[in-house]
Amino acid sequence: MEEEKPAQWIAILQSGEIQLRLGLVDREYNQKYEQMKQELKKKRGLNHIFQQKDWMGYTRAMMAMEDEITSLLTQQLTGQA
Image (cartoon, rainbow, N blue to C red):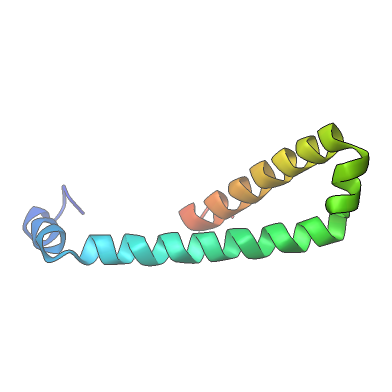
């Protein structure tokens, strides 16, 4: 849009519309992220008991799960899903 319609792009930037849209996208992303995280934690048994028994295993599983969620949401956001 910046190259194809520069005047419209400048007007949108000056109006603050971009910041509003990005804020909405950010909130939606964060809500989906937290929802997916809670669902996968429950599905995979990543709870405080597992954490107490195997802290390193829990940490690795959480990091892998968070990477997976980020990748899925990024694909959805960019339309690659």
